[in-house]
Length: 270
Image (cartoon, rainbow, N blue to C red):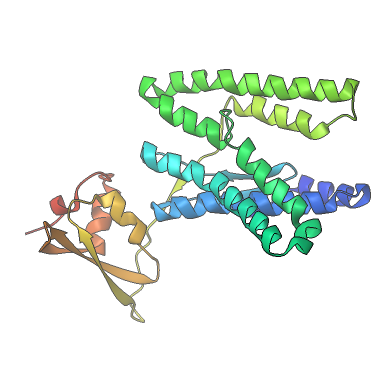
């Protein structure tokens, strides 16, 4: 994780303009959002290896090649759902302790805004990523082109709102920056990176952990149990009966071959 120099500039400017609390709340909500993506991806055997804190939020990068469509949708939803849970948590806090409202209303509004905005079907927002996954059956390139339509429409609408604020209200520069972000996002987006499973060091010993798992599960499903500080042995069961053991080395061998959808019962060596 790193902080972009422009964020430091925005931090200083916000301190002089009275928007410091808003910027800090937005930064924390954005970090929560991206870390939720990272946690969801890690549970599926992927790693989001780089988070950059920007003036308009946070961005995450990597490579999602090899992830299934359903897994990608869950990773995309994890960020907005984390913000939604936080907003609901603040609402519950106000119900129990109404006196906390003046100190938490900004943070709650930011979390709710991130939840709603990220569900817009515009790339690179999470809603746009989900739309791209759903359109993938028509082809990756065609899906990318089709996603540009709602992305550019949304960007144009937000840019129109900026023009409106210039004519009637105080100019909303955040709307202009957001429209520019969406316009640029129509031509690309961030990635994820595949986990690198380094060989374990057995010189000082390592704890063995045994996992009972259905033999119908795939090698990709078993990835979520891998941990750096434990050595795993999978006890596989089929129709309620023990069918064999699968060691961590055997599982990793299958994963390195890219056979994520291979059933664990077909990974057993007899």
